[in-house]
Structure formats: structure tokens, C-alpha cells
Length: 209
Image (cartoon, rainbow, N blue to C red; front, side, top):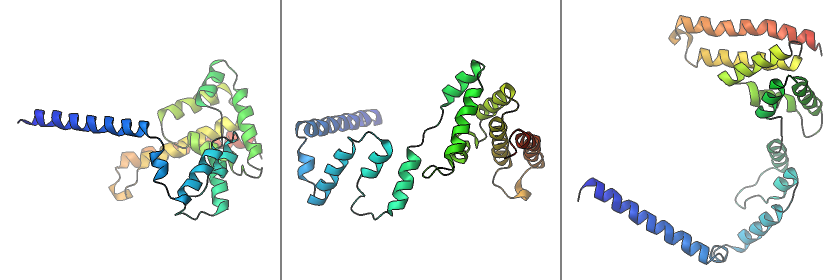
């Protein structure tokens, strides 16, 4: 029997076994519950009750800790609040710039600045900048450039571009020792922070605070 036939036979066996598994699973939904311990059943009921909660933070907090884990409640609360954070989407920002309304972005980021000082949302603005702009991708480079061109006096736009420059410099530098890094790469990565300096100065002028 050649290799092709063996592979086809194995695929057929896997397909039949998978079909049987899902058939039996679907025909007897009570079977998995019957195999659970009383403690697991109580956890399962709490999970089902949590799924009915509309508020994402409260729903996350309502999920029970797994029996084998002992998580600090403050850590759980911080994790749930962080996971429920929402910010303006790339599509919304791009549409605003396409329609010549950069003020939409400024209003959004201003609200993140205000949230930063509220209990439960500490660091919201910093987190947004980190999530959206602290990387070296061409998408972020092009977007921050568009934003600055659309609103040259926006402290938020200038900060976004500065953060991107730092991330791009880090990516260009790499993680090797300087002795193992080609000179042209070293020169290239130091030029990006130099480009960041005037951006940061403009940002300070635009928003001294």
C-alpha cells in the first residue's frame, strides 16, 4: 500500500471518528454534565448565570474562579476592567480623516485623557497609545502622518507619531549586541529618535500640561 493510500485511509478514519463524536455529543447533551463533580456543577451554574449579565465588567466579575486556582480579587477586578475597555476603532478614525474631521479623533483622545484620572480607568490614555501606536508597522506610520497633516497643532496626533517613531527605532535597532549590529542599522535607528524630538517639542507647545 503506497503512502497516498495510507494517508487517505487515515483521513477517512479521522473523519468517521469525528462524525461519531459530534453525533454522540449532540444526541446526549446531558452526558457531559453527569460526568461533572458537584463542585464543577456549581461552577457551571454560576457561569450560566453570569452569561445573562449585560454589563461586560459585571459579567466578567460574576464568573467563578476555577476550583484549582486562587486569584486575588483585586487582580481579577483589574483584569476585568482592562478587558472591557473600548476605544475608537481604526475604521472610525480613518473615516474621520477621510471626511476632514480630525476633531473627532481629538475629542476621543481627550475623553481618554479624562478617563485616565478616574478610578478603574487609570492610565487609559497611555494604554490606548500603547495598544494603537507603539509598533513599527507601516500602517501606523502612514496613519500618524495623515493625522498630523490633518491637524498639525493636535497634541494627541503629535504624541501618536512620536510614540510610533520610538517603536520604529527599536525595531530597526533589533535585539543584538552593538558589536553584532551593522553600522548602517545603528545609524538608521538613531535617525528615528532625532525625528521624534521636533514632534515632541511641537506636542509640548500644543499642550504644555
